[in-house]
Image (cartoon, rainbow, N blue to C red):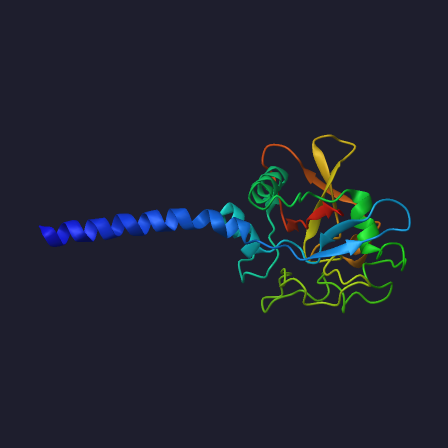
Length: 222
């Protein structure tokens, strides 16, 4: 009888330890940021990489991505509401003031703060060295797939994957107020859809998830 009681006590302690261990995981999420100082307007910081599945899981404890190949793959297949919830939870624990970029901020960062006016983020020529897109993202089954963040060349500011891989949500509501603008194109996109000026959108209501749609974070420069 004594032995059974001991096992139960150990099990309860173990469950309690796991539940208490979760909250500090959120506060340990550190987003690598790059400072963007445009020629006109206020400076800001933007994520060096798209938010990864590891970072998402630490905050949300869910696995919505279509491609679950690894921690360093970008989070995707998430809704606008879920992203806002992620940001709120992360800010509650870190007090960092993270948010989604505006369309203008996203484009300024992609153009490298107006210093290099490229067609794509990092180049005006071949996308192969800078982006995962329709022509180079196929797996062994010839299906376009996302890839780990930061595995292509960055733009002049050191920011990765702003063209291709996953499209990125912005904070700007589209002309149709039920949609939010996205930028950058995806691993399935043709080059034209990966251009910095290109614009797309996903529903911003009802928890509708954007296929191959993820995001990167911004915070104000202090």
